Length: 550
Image 1 (tube, rainbow, N blue to C red):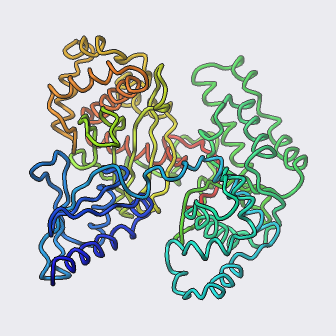
Image 2 (image 1 turned 135 degrees about the horizontal axis):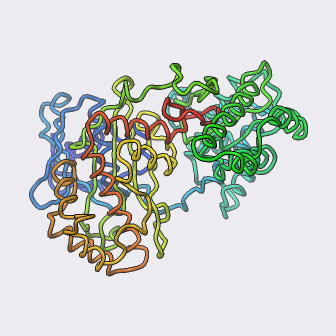
Image 3 (image 1 turned 90 degrees about the horizontal axis):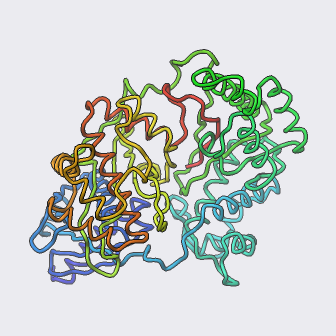
């Protein structure tokens, strides 16, 4: 086997790993061989790519080792393919940013775009009875496509474009595509096809009349929970992106309003009660509303169904979330998930990342990455729960608090959602009150403030850094480099200074996790994983019912 044949074989093997995971296949990779058995993969986000890449290798039972090699400060993956081909030497895969299919070739899809697109396709399928299965078979015949493609996670682009040809004009409008032909977001066409397929299978006998993302029931329920319970952000209670509705808006509203008459408005209840009494009244009222919605969802002919959407593929399935009715006066419902008794596996040495290294290259902004990462594994399913912790508004020049955003590996790399930040702080306070605060104003915002805190009594960053450095997978720098790089980031000002503050907030959050008992740490991260998905657990049982397509 000559050099070119070996490199082609390596490339084929690496590609087989990439296509096995949506995170990898959507990010893509550009191949560059330095030597016969040393490969550079140029990708969009190398830490995210490397983590997912090694997870797939582990799943495929391909031997590998993650280690630093000479001339690089970022770990490489050394893969042993000899179990497949004895003549191949171990391949060293190095990672660099600045390439891949995710390198800003297309504008990012806004959440509202894909939600409106899904609502449109669902209405075509379940209300107007457009048969997309029939359409896709016709497209395959026309394009002479082998039926084996239907077993693939992502269907061929030409088949999808032909299948949705009558919808493309509307979808281009919803996705703000300026071209007059085609459609660039093929992964969303693929997702729409498989999502409507599973939705149709579950609700084929239901006579829905509309799917609403804006106005209608969405506006009604958003206003109702604000008026009744003071909940200003609907998604912190129920993450449904689209509502399927049967019956007139007036009839649905009257049904719920009649049942909710006995629940005082928040304006009245907050004057009558305070503290724990008010919390208990709101909890009881929220549980009652949830029971009404469950009746609407699970009735013989559903009148209202809330749907949470994720980018999915041929593995799309429907999960009914929070359908258990929780009695108003029972705080510990045994049917709910007990995250304390059965927490996820958390190994900080492998699962915590807080890198302060300044990378070079065109993808670098001359500073360290803004995010901190925490991962956990469900021992029962093998799914991995990856949290990205970073500024809620990374472009802000005046300051920002953190957001805790979840991605689930094993679920098509679907976004699991954001943990309501007030619940993160509540979880912290249950363990150690005031140990972590999600308030950027209480953290250094200038280099002067940062340097003053390096050895101060109330916030000793030298102590914090050393604790984290000794117990996490990757921090990337020495203490001296840490102080230099953070100081430099603050001196750049603007959004970079905002992100420097948030990185310190993330560092302190890791420090909190590393200084509590192991069972508390595992329970905390497990709670966060369920809260991000708005799934009821024993600690918090007032999330609303919905179905999730993922």
